[in-house]
Length: 174
Length: 174
DNA sequence: TTTTTCATGTAAGGCGTTACATGATTAC
DNA sequence: GTAATCATGTAACGCCTTACATGAAAAA
Image (tube, rainbow over all chains, first blue to last red; front, side, top):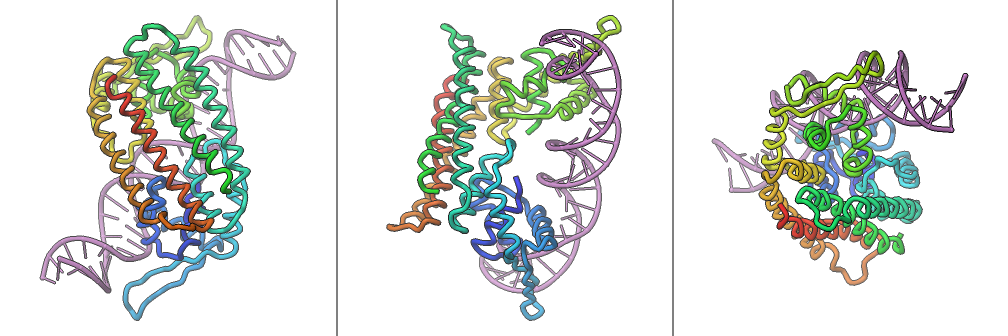
């Protein structure tokens, strides 16, 4: 899922300390993306050694030690590369949300194509679910077990419908 | 998320080999729950040592070696215990789907209470999202960046609405 | 003055992913 | 006879979670 790209996006919005990022992940972004502070500190250190981010050490006169992270051009380039790259099959919906936030902060990059690709993918999945429904749940008097299994499938169907409705409204904006 | 409970549920529906479970996870269950064959074999071995499942070795006259797994009473008890246990906060929606499938195969156990609990949780989350929307996205002429960030939040809102609609329809059936 | 918040880190264990590996059976 | 499918496993690496740990500043 690449926490790193989520962190770069967040840091482009506002340079921050690891602690602040952890808190922000608990709020706005974190409602659909969560990361512990250990993950965040680890990835920040890695991105610093990769030259994607820069550490601004703020000693504040012998007081509290804080490290404010800023995105470097290499980090920005890497984010653009990732947004344009078609998401792997395992890549979840959260990745798309980060890509949209990245496009919000960087201006038009490759999200439109990715969104179109995902729309086709979700259309196929919805069609598959509907096929399964027609094949397995067209019985006249279903048992309790069948009705419950049908509910599980219906959750998949309504999730896909909801996703597609959202995506089709979003497409003209990217 | 406990693959083990998903495996027990699947084995209660039909005793199978590890390979068959992996294939089934690729199809019906696996549309929302995926596991590699290594995970499955490892967990089956563990459940066998825990006494949750039993291995029926089918040598088939010097031919192909297959191990058919059957659920033992202890495994069934463990599944019931897990279904009745309130899901931890990190527990995803997939766990609920497995719990419903478990209730389909075992008869009425504790899913109703769990569903009611989750409905309250999702109602709160939806309310939080709507608060954020009222606070951050009520501007008259939003910028492109603001509109895109709003789309991300709207995805959260419509997901929650969809979830709640499904759950309220499902509640009378459990 | 005590608790909460800010801030960063180490260490251990478990789980998941990926690659590698083997061998029998069935389909073409 | 060759490829695909069935079937099971080992090993390495990395990531994530949880617990433990420290310390200063701000709030109660």
